[in-house]
Amino acid sequence: MSTNSDLIAQFHAYLLTEKRVSENTFAAYSKDIEQLELYLTKNNIALRSMQKKHLSNFLKLFRDQGMKAKTLSRKISTLKLFFTYIHQHFKVPNIAKALVFPQLEKTLPTYLSEAEIQKLLTAANVDGSNKGVRNKVMLYLLYATGMRVTELVNVSIDQLHFDSGFIQLVGKGKKERMVPLPKNILELLRYYLDHVYPKVVSMQTKQAKDDAKTSGERPEKAVRSRTAPNYLFTASYNNTIKPISRQSFWMILKKVLVKAGITKNVSPHSLRHSLATHLLKNGADIRSLQLLLGHENISTVQVYTHLEKSQVRKVYDEKHPRA
Image (cartoon, rainbow, N blue to C red):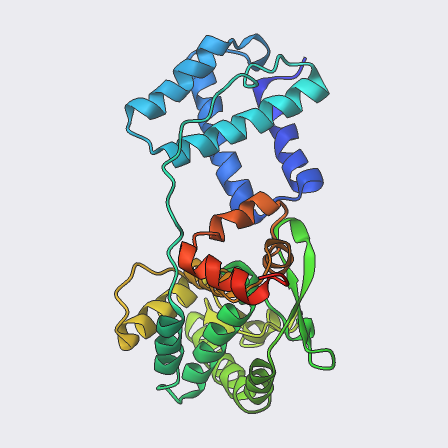
């Protein structure tokens, strides 16, 4: 008979092979299940004999700690998925089926106005160094496409299709989508690749080789990691050339926000929210937005419909054929 660890290992494999969840989602699910396993071990409870009261007591631990409803809701989602899986495959009672999600406070995503976006992009133009141009291209591309920051830092040169004017993005669950690029962004990318990218990579390669020599490693190892794929935005980490990290990009964004005089609590994801909001204000439909952003469910996109009634009326008057 399968032990707790066996069932959890099977669930992990399911997440990676069948669900094909992203790295971040897998980490979140794993943490939730790890906490459940710890609770079961501490109380000497087997998953097959676990009762609803045990699950309620487990969640009560987090409520008593003052956990926010959003985080608790995610844990419940994990439990529902986990128990559904082990019920279907191993006939373990699905005691999570009746769990009720806590009521979430409805909060609108942070986004920048079109004027603030213009200020941000203008501020990004100030630094004319090679790294400065790279950082500007990253900001421009993130806002122009509405891609996730994980998609941005992992973009390779091969994903750019200058002939058709599209960029090929790989989103959650390894799902691919083609996103059109404005002409000015294509021109900026071409300039970056022709005049800036070679200098940035050369500088980083030299730095990686120097660091490798200092640490006693073979200098050739420093350039090996950038050969396949050719990442569009790179940095030197631990004597090797790698795609720039999400954390590094966040720091870049924070510095440009300061230069632009923008004091809102903005994250890289805020630029995605900003594009979605601006497109809706200019008459884009929800379905098109869903395809552009790579959301699996259209209900996820509806969070962006936080427009003022006056703006909705304006779009209606301009777009409706009988208005």
